[in-house]
Amino acid sequence: MATEQSVDLVDDETVGLFTKAVLLAALTAALAQISIPLPGPLVPFSLQPFGMFFAGLLLGPLWGGVALLLYLLVGIAGAPVFSNANAGIGYVIAGQSGGFLVGFLVGAVVAGAIAHRSIAPKPVADLSVPVQVVALTAAIAVVYAIGIPWMSFVAGLPLTRATALMAPYIPLDLLKLGIAVAVVQGGYLDGR
Image (tube, rainbow, N blue to C red):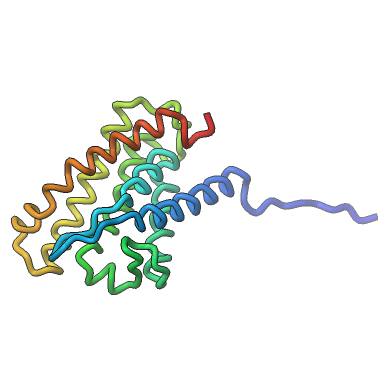
């Protein structure tokens, strides 16, 4: 009489984290469509940073990075998931927003690393508000540190001019940061 044995190739926790990463990639794509195109060399104003914020805070550095990597790969493959329904590798490499998109990936990893201080994510309820604020502020800094020089190069602008063009976005991103922390603290993303 033969006995059946079951082998789990991937544990339930990994499946859950991957599922959350896919959902956060989809959320980031949806938030990117809530955007306002701006004239000239300005990048669109969008709600994309919320995807980076939530990925880092909810999933930590590894899975938060996976979420934003999935988002980028889907967009590079041609799905219109970037702001204003843009897509393609050319939009990332040669577009003025490309550095900001790459910055979102790195920012999610940085936010997750600071917030969780490990590869494995902690429960969101265990993250204090000051830690969340520091993590998300660092993520914003990373996005600007990558995005502004990239925009400067692609648009042929002096770095100081590109920095000046992006300065008005900073208060708006800090407002988004505050909203993201309030959403997390309100328990809207962890089932409380």
